[in-house]
Image (cartoon, rainbow over all chains, first blue to last red; front, side, top):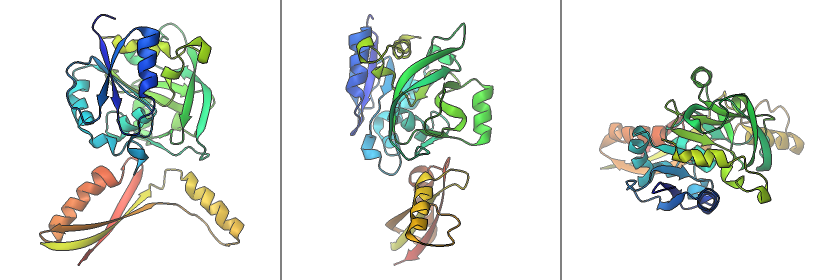
Length: 221
Length: 84
């Protein structure tokens, strides 16, 4: 993909960074670069993925400590410039804690750590993260989280609905999320946060390729 | 400089479901405790902090609570402060 480069952020406790890099490089031929959380120089990457895992051991709240890393501090300008940021699972939690996306992610309703494949309705194609331009589409992606229950107040939910910021909804809500929400975007559409793992669904031999389109959309302008 | 001992209490907002609290309530009832109407779990954070007087220290603690200790989307906080 020419010189396009995706930065994959590594926090202490990230554990999906290599999966994301494998999916981008091996399945999509998109160059990646690991970015240590203490780096604040984002000048040589064109898009950023905040991968899943347990940054800072999930101390205090998931994503709460990561928010204060130099890299997240530098992210504001990156997002404002219109470049794309994808937060997966713990990455989604970091994006809500740091205010790039509204709401919060709290303990699953049944308290279980849920590791499963889930069916998801694509609700909005804002930002072009999902290929649903023509008709309603359902995809299947893996989830693996203990604290993935999306919560927001009713005003925020109304804003999400009215502005078409809800990207994905669970068909069979596994964790008690408000309005079955599995993923949302910011108003501009260049930031997507989702609990399911698209990088784990990029090869038929390991359970499907429904995640490919979302990762590939990182290269959209 | 004065030194203060601060106890910060962080609680899930009443509108947020607390499944851990519900599970603990259920276990409490199994233990034989009667009359439990509600049980919710929060956090308590103890801080020792120096500053020029109570007002300055309250300012620092307010910032810490609002930006770090609690996520005000889902949690409320309050604190008590004791001069050492």
